[in-house]
Amino acid sequence: MVTHIEGNLLASDDCFAIVVARFNELVTRRLLEGALDTFRRHGVQDANLTVAWVPGSFELPIVANRLASKGSFAAVCCLGAVIQGETTHHEYINHQVAAGLTQASQRHDIPITFGVLTCQTLEQAMNRAGGKAGNKGEEAALAAIETVNVLRNIDNA
Image (cartoon, rainbow, N blue to C red; front, top):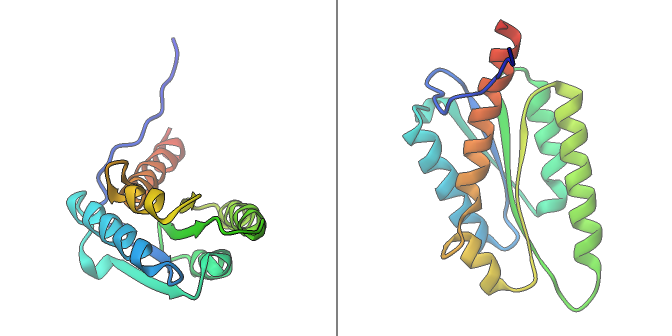
């Protein structure tokens, strides 16, 4: 018989941190609103939510790492928006942010979710921050909740 380990989407007693990049705040504030709304709808009280603002997406990993090291958060949700310009600068940012968040997650053994938009235009970013393509902040929050519960179910198996 195959064993299935799944997580639910309830997080009533867990504490979550959200790290938000201020650069492209028109977009990231909408991602934050989506994440906060999602955490609340899935049982997280405001007292169990901590939001940390950083200058840009490049700073997300260091702050996520520090928050994860505290041991008081079930997961860290990272939100940012890197919009392609006329150079390849965005590629360097995106790769380093993804690698840094992955390393921090593995180092501290907690979920650190990637809610960083990597778009070619502001219009694409807005569509992914509550427009016709949904809200990736909401998706990052859901991923945090579900992954926390999957890990808890593995520990209890």
